[in-house]
Image (cartoon, rainbow, N blue to C red; front, side):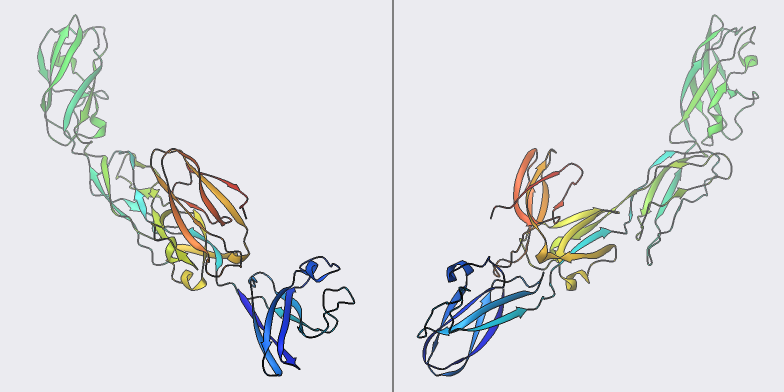
Length: 421
């Protein structure tokens, strides 16, 4: 709402008519009615200077607004001889209301910094001494905290064994209890010791090989492929060796078995790399870290009223939401967000929103209602609505274009229509 003052000289007492209209608001006509003047009556009790305050439903945030009008004593001749909609005896005026700075600015708010949410180990590698550390790239944002993770190396204890081939041509019958050897070179494992197996041979083929004693806890990845020394089972003729595969309880002694994210860090503006190099062998392989989110309370950054519902959303790195907010409130936004002014909120289009939620859980959506400049008692409002599971096109009402925020923007969908006036 806006207002302006009209000052005129009254030469007589009695009622005076003050008429006003937005300049060029209507096509010219031949009668006063066609010009859509608004009027008010001023009762003058003492002739002289009169001041009248006129309140008008003008939105001054988008463009200046010019009003034209006239003042005439009701006792004077009201004839409009020129056909311009103004009595010939009236005094005319023109008032331009300057464009005002909109206190409500449409901002695009982007999540720019996050912590790490999850680290995942794909392969434990080999050749670790057990003293290495996981290195996560430092964050690039000033003041960020580098994330840390604690490695857990394998125990090296053997609990499982399988035969990938029983071999042929073994001369003995057994059963035997033997120490298996490496398939390459026929030597016993260099670090893991004490492993013995019970072997049964039938018709020259190893038909059974099970662990008798698991040995110590120092078995490494290179110890996994084993065979049987033919000399320990009566020799071998023209045949092939039995192939055995052993497996550890909780990782090999020289491999990374698991990781624990001890500090998710902060200030990450992108996805960091994660490495841990062994003394020898192959390094462990990690999935790209899953980055965290940042909570954004829409009710804290607005230029109007809120409905009191849960207006907080978790925003992923690089994702943005758009809301109307005062400059003062945006000044208090966390540094993990980038806020950019786009345009004035009172000048934006109003659109009718419908939201579908195909998921099996209720999800929320938030819009900001429109203000058309005519109702000062009903300003822009932030409204959050819960959309039930498996809902199609639930109407949220009319809201500012692009102001809608969805809890699950991947699965939830929006349709729009013109607002019904």
